Length: 466
Image (cartoon, rainbow, N blue to C red; front, side):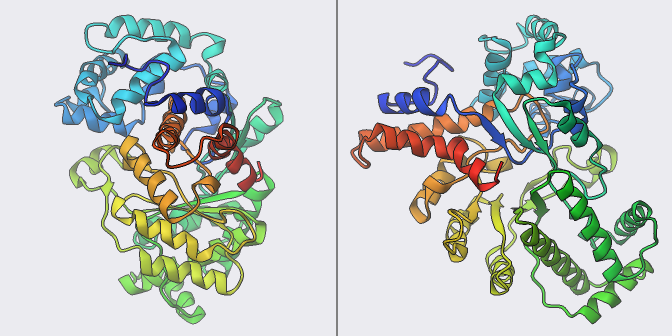
């Protein structure tokens, strides 16, 4: 019997142990998609307590607490930070076999050196020990990132953001790249005409002119895309139910935009045409600048209307959706490829039923200009757990080139989430190790070590030109 979370956690063979400890463990981290707050990095924030850095904004934990019968008062409500931590500690023993159980204890070990299993019995002791450390310089935000050997981060930023804190970080001279990523979801959300109009008004205020024409709107957004590029951005990101690839004419778009600006209401078909046009133009701009575009597809968001109205979005009421992905995704990528304007692209699916679809779709648009030009991204959101990662790695291995994969990311709002890279690396090494010991691949230690280091770090560094 192995000890829980020992040095060889998840490594089931001697070969896996060698590959992880000699090759994967030492590699720095590039986290090319997350939801960290750049102001907290720029100001090198010290959190007052572990609840603030660990539970604030973490809807994974919130969902588990609700499922364990914890009242909302102790989750997002007015309870004290200690009371919220206490309820989380009480919940942890019930998360057995959920990835939260592994993540929680990896984070306590890697950041705080705490090897005890968290429970209600030791909650106060753990809380006090973590809080004392969080007050020190070593445990500032930049210190936490340094502990995990993080070299490059791409945050997720709205086109209207002035990127003030990214500029401040760049000028500070710290040994960490924090780059913005262009996330224009709100700029194309014609499902909410009122919200879209408010967004267009804000964009007009930034540019100093009112926007009433579709072409003027595109030009104003393009200027924000240019602004992001001038401030270090080389990545875009889109969170969509599915790719939109409806046919449209420029005349139709002008009419639809005028209806939007007049709050006249548009039909579902018109909304699809508008979103399709916007998405295609964003892709053209990304190609023009040589950016990497990312598409996170398949989330069914805000399912609980009652709690959405009181708590707002991103509070733990999203799930996997069953949207058809293949036909529109192929049409979108093909349209760009026909014009030779398909930039480097990463696709993420939330529904595991789409795994083979994604793994084969990326092969349709590899053109030999860049190794792994079109990527199938790592297990995302509900799939960034052991089984989800294994399925993604195995499917990509069977239908593409795992050796050219750009590896893991956190997609997190927490500065304590970076052991997820270690989790991925251990799983990766275990799969390779098992294949070696089963005689399925030869044991060329140096070559296997290189492939693993490439997946962990080098491929991303090359792919993103970081």
